[in-house]
Each structure stands twice: as structure tokens, then as C-alpha cells.
Length: 209
Length: 388
Image (cartoon, rainbow over all chains, first blue to last red; front, side, top):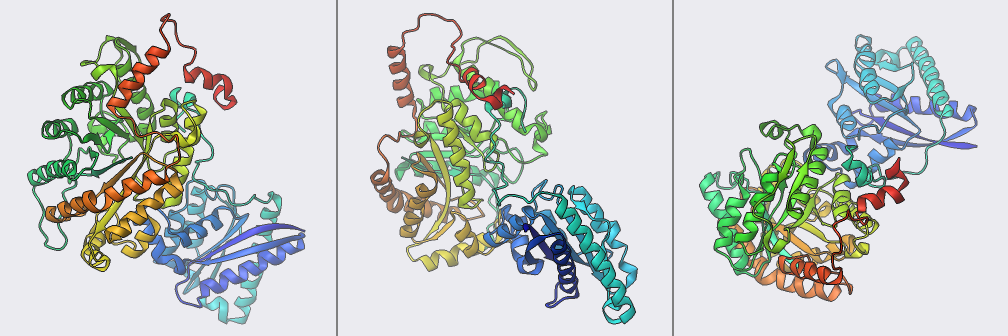
């Protein structure tokens, strides 16, 4: 049985939060779908809230503290990512975006990503496709076609809940499929570019990058 | 090992009193610091270079020339000289002139400058930062070593039959350090020329400083300048001391909490844990500074930042006094005991003149034919990546 690393970032603010609830449901669906493909998943779930201070410190000082650094490594070296944000004022939350802002350029390039969002009513659901999806397109992540939005009604109303469950299952299948198609990444290596030196002769010839 | 101070030259309001020094006061304060640094036995004074408020040191050689005239022994340096936005011809001339006036007590630390809007004021573009650094320094390096230079490049008007004057004192250019916090091209550049590498060390975690210095050392050896552990490394450090460590923390905290660089961010305690910042007793500063060699190896120059964040000049002078009398003498002794045999001191004008004389005696010049020991040629021939 091969293995893939699945990172989950949930930016809910309360504990427990409906955002985390959705993240957990998506995770369970993806893990089950990977299992159907003979792949075991090693899952790391991160709450943005746990890193809130470190995130702001990083913005101000220019470097991540040790705990945040580990979280960034987890995201950067994952074979797949589930990212779930509450929708505030028409978009992802500031805390969620801050987590994305501290990633290195190219950190999520090609990484299969499943997007989720929560909000008070279904009227916020387009934020998933108008805000989250373009953000991850900018990062060159491989976002799966199904994004899952869960409004308050989706949790309470039995009919809506079963529709939500179907969307979650479909999204989990899509993420598992995308992750299964890619080889597992190697162990985490430092992503600061200090291991690959551009020889000075090339720098001198005008190749700065 | 050399010990000294480096100053950014910021004009920052004192968060405790609300008072902001005038530019004139700040300039005089920097000079006063340099003079006291010599009196208390430090080896190096280095000034920043900035061309935007709230910083005053726009004209480093003017300031260093004035300090040179009023000192006898201290080495005058920069932290950093902007190799991107300055014309390399002007750097060659200004620092050669300073070198003559200061009797050779001059070296430079080159840096890029990270303030985007400054570049166009000098006809440049920050997006070319690395390329400017490479091209400008390659020209500067030649201007100090070749009497007549024909040169053509991307960023500056061509030179034909140009001689930079005055020629370096005793025919020996000032030693150059290359400073960078995170760009791997800079330790590579320092290693290529066999120059020094300086890591500011105070805004980033130790692990990062360690990796940058390791890269420099590895490439220094690759380019044939000597074993990796004999490369020339300098580090920054940031300290605030009182006899009683709790008093140091109490007094420094408002300056830390409001400092332009990290204010509003992490706590003093977290920042001190993650970076080399040390706030405490002189003994704590000694103990902490001695740990630097554990992650960068034996190194040659330690500069401390003491005048920043709006600290009043009276306090800064006290810090310098403590550094000179209580800290540096112990560090000199302890570092000397720990140092591996064979590790060289930082080059000085005297040592460079001696080295030049020794190599002239060892290798009498027979011909002016182009040297085949040019490391550029060696590198291209032996390094498959370079040839690609």
C-alpha cells in the first residue's frame, strides 16, 4: 500500500467550528477515497487559529517562528491539501489569507487542492469560486473541480445534509484521484534554495535566477 | 578576531520620552559613537548607507573621512555600501581616497538595499538587484586591480582606457565583505572572489544564518581560496545590557515593542529566543555571543548593533562602554581559546600588503599573458552545471 501526505488547513475561529467540521468531513471522504485506491493517507490537520499570532509576527519580522515554520513545511510538502475558510464579507477570512500569504512562491505549484467554505447562508456560496478558486489558481495549485460550500442549513436540514454529504463524497473522490495520479513527494527538504547554487560563471553571464 | 559596532543611522523617536533627535544630532551621535568605540578598544566602526528618511548616513565616506581624522586605530567600514545604486566607478574612487586618508584603516561591506523606490532615484530598478550587484562589483574589482580598464556592461556607460584614481593605497584594494540575509547568489559571489561574507544575523533565526554561512564556506573552498573552515565570516549581533538582567529587560522593552523593525510583532522574549538578540547582563551577552561559533564555525568579525530604535545617546554610550570594558575583552580571550588552529584573522591593510609582497616574491611575473588560473575558466571547465 503506498502512502500520501494530506495536509488540512481550517480557518474557523470558534472551537469547535462548522469550518472545522466541514474540513473533517472532507478529510474523511478523501482518506476513504484514497483507501479505495490502495493508498493510505497520513493526515496533518492545522487550525489557522493556533498560528494566529505567529502569522502576524511573521508578516512583521519576515521569518516564521518554529511552530509556524513546521506548519508551512507541512503544507509545502503535502501530496494533497484541503483548505477550508469561513466566508467573511464576501471572501475568505483574513486569517486564512494570511496563511496563504506566508507561503513561498511556488510552494503549492501542482499540488492537488480541495477547497471548502462555510457561511451563514447559501447566498455566500459563490465566494468559493470568486475568491478561493482564483487565489489558488494564482498559486498554480491543481484545484479539483468540486468545491464544497456548507451553509448553516446544510448541517440542520436532513435533505440538505444528505446533499452536502454527496458533494463531500464527490469532492473527496476528485482529490483522491488527483493525488493518486501523482507520485508521492520525498521527505521535507529546506525550501530556501540554499542547496542549489547557481555557479558564479552563470551569474556573471547574466543568469541571476 | 575583530569586534565592532554597526549603525543603521536611523532617526527614530524615543518611545519613552517621545523626543526625536534632529538629523544633526544623529550625525554627531554616530561620530561620537565611533570615537568612543576606538577609546574602549573596539576594532571596527561601520556605518549604513541610506538615501531616504528617516536615515541620515547618505554619504559614508564623508563621515568616515571625518572619523578617520580623529582616530588612530579603529577600522572604518560600511554596513552596507549600496553596490546596486552607486556607480562602481565612484565607489572605487571614494573608498580608495578614504583608504589613503585613513592610512589603510578601511574596508567595505557591500549590500543591495531593499527599498524599491530608492533604485529609480539613481537610475536603477530593484528588479535588477542581483544582476546589478554582480556586474557592478565585477567592475569595481577590476578598477582597483587594473590600472587601465576597458569595460562594457549592461547597466553603466562603457569605459575605454579608464584609470580610477587614486590607485589603492600600496596597490592593495580595501578588503570587501558581501552582506546578504537570504539571497544565495551573494555568498556565491563572495566565495568566487575569495572575499568575506557577512551575515546580519539579527533579523532571522540562527538556522538560516547557519545555512547561508555553510553555503559560502563550501563555495569558498570550491573556488580554491582555501579550506571551508578558513573562509572569512562576519556576523551581526544585537544586545542591550544592564548589570542586572531584569533591569535590562525592563528598560529595553518599550524600545523593542516600538522598534520600526519588529515592533507590534513578537514579544521580546520570543524574539530573543528565535534570533541572536540578547537583552540581559554582560555575562549573558558573553555566553550568547560565544554560541555563535557553534553554528557558523570560527569567524573573524563580530559587529554589534547598539544605537537604534530611538535609544537615547546617553544609554547607547553606556552600552558601548560596557561592550568595550566588560564584554569584548572576555570574548577575545574565550574565542581565541576555542578557535581551531589555522583559522586566519580578518584581512587588514597591513596583512594584505604583506600577503601581496609574499606572493610577488613567490611568483615572479614572467609574462603578461592572460592567466589560466582565472577561477571563472576553471569553474566553467570543471563544473558541468556552469558549462550548461
